[in-house]
Image (cartoon, rainbow, N blue to C red; front, side):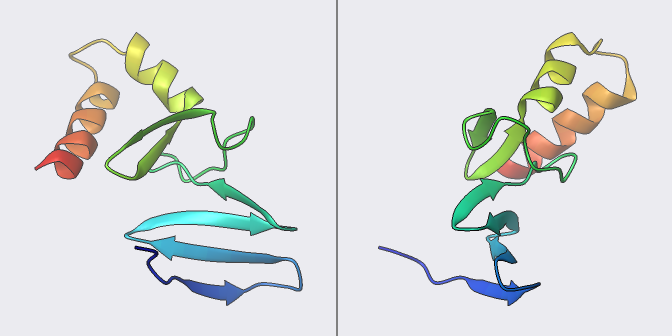
Length: 87
């Protein structure tokens, strides 16, 4: 089933779409996800990162997660974000 979404126009070819708290950027017919953690569009497009339950994490945040020490605030931030998605 296709769910409807709202587009708030920012110009003739750009807009922002919100689907279940996930934002996507539409630019000249191309749709780019926005990272759930850093709110940036991934530099290599749609497949530059991973999704958990429909929320997108860019490859930069993915690398930060992999290299973060378990005792750092960045790692704890990731845990809170991912736990919020899973539970």
